[in-house]
Image (cartoon, rainbow, N blue to C red; front, side, top):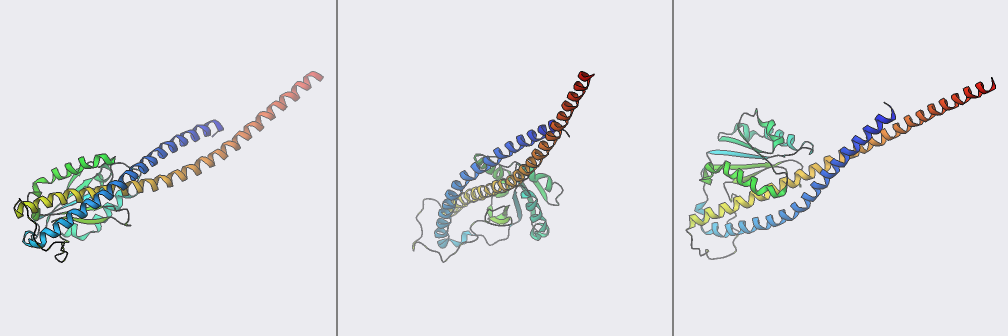
Length: 284
């Protein structure tokens, strides 16, 4: 490989490095936006849980004790690549989970994200595939699509168990989060008021309204957290790749300089040889 081809190769690698840097900074921008969304969502979730605790303390009979008839597992992967083993870890987590394979419930797996779909195509459980977010602004639309795809089974939230598997930034491994039945962590000892709330809705109607708000807030919090983790994976993957590219470009640049020095030496030798021939001709 001569110096010209090396220069072309170095330019190609530099272009790739510029593109990867742009993708990295896009992920950083998304992470900055997500940090604000996640904080707002946590406060909203806490408000709903406090309201539910107060209400259910006086109406615990609304919480079903019956076992669900079906199980929906939502696995949140990535729509785009360049995020290392983000999707592979999710697939392996499902494979290792005995509840998924040995459950007596009718189980459906819904995967979120193009890069995750292929891994579940041959899975033994029923499988549906939905697109994942590329930008944080797409998350509400994707949640609407998810709810619409399972809407027929959510007519009675007591009849279905909804579990979400996703990456959480603060955890080393993906986490299973039980979403439905709702309010399973209800603590009857946590009471803010001594008298039952006065409402214009029936107790059942108010309970299902709380479930709707809870489901919407919980899914938003989960999706925002998962997308934050995806972007953190992508930033780390880009950093590693960019470091390797920088080392590769540096090595090629040194080799290019060596080749160029050899070419210059050869050119000088040709010039000196030509000068000697001309001097010999003049002497003759």
